[in-house]
Length: 123
Image (cartoon, rainbow, N blue to C red; front, side, top):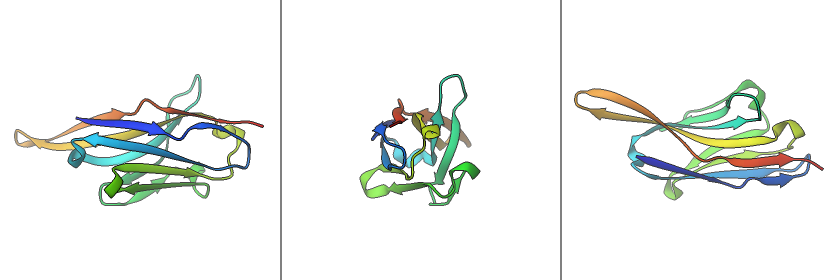
């Protein structure tokens, strides 16, 4: 299995920036795709950005311009840089990994979530 641990959240003033980290461990060779999600109370988790094992990056439309996702393989860490933070960015940010493993003649998929890190944007 794979374990994900997020860090870097906290209280930030509007206009500030933040760099979230997600450290992964375990069967990291099974990781096919990783992403950052955000959840606000009463709403479903929303995917903000993702990166494949091959390095292809995608952003949700609202995330383009202020968010940057990156993966540092040597550190086993996924990063999420957010600039020009707004109150609407407040929420719990989750790290996500899709696992893909060939087992018993077929590809098997699984999902792993981190525990989340709270980001509060307020003056």
